Image 1 (cartoon, helix red, strand yellow):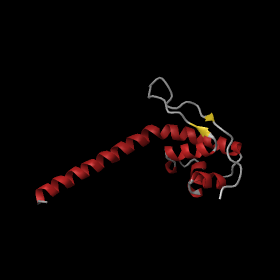
Image 2 (cartoon, one colour):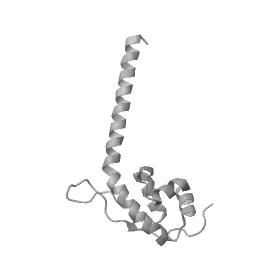
Image 3 (cartoon, one colour):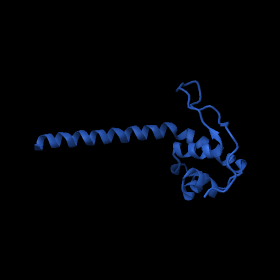
Image 4 (cartoon, rainbow, N blue to C red):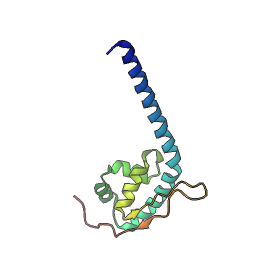
Length: 121
């Protein structure tokens, strides 16, 4: 590989990484209001489903410290996929609908089945 082709490859690689970072930042900004709304619902749903934080963290595979930060409404700790996993363990599902400026991005949460009440190990 010549020096010129290596420099070209490196420049393309850096440009690709920069675009990926920009896309990720745009996605986070787009979903952040929804994440905040879902955290509010999650705080209400967790006691209602009969699971404590330890059981919820074990069943979802999320660290208990992360779950504690989310429940204290530290939004920077929460990602959209994390909230969706927690809601799925609690027995709820979110349907993503097509983006429409006149409509909410997400339909209301739907209860699928009662959550597992046995202690997960």
